[in-house]
Image (cartoon, rainbow, N blue to C red; front, side, top):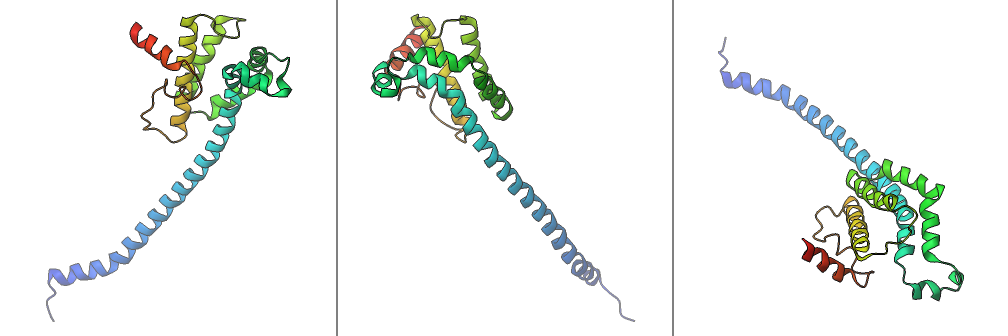
Length: 185
């Protein structure tokens, strides 16, 4: 009878456990891949839902920020007041439904910044457009923060832009308001 060394036993155990270990790791990898694919598919669907909600929520603000010249250049808008139309949209049932949708699909930071923006309008009552310099600065700041949070929620988490930069491309005087805020701080 020959003596078996510990190396023989280790080799035997290794030859039995290696296929089992490979099988277990393959199963774990497959399961993780399925979870990841499902998560990616859900994120894609959620992104589509978010885009739709964000577009509808931003519509009245786009109207408010459209220049009077650009508004009147479209023949369909003659004799229509864009500020009144924006206020009607903000108060509509459809807009409220979109607000609910946003609260369900939007990221926490988007919902919080939207809440801040809407609280600004709620506190102002029936006034549709900010009138004083301070009100305009506050409104623009809140809108810029909302747009920045939307940008982050759409995959640009590490953006170097700030909330004022989000407004520069379509608001002529935004740098003036930014400087005023910086001087007040």
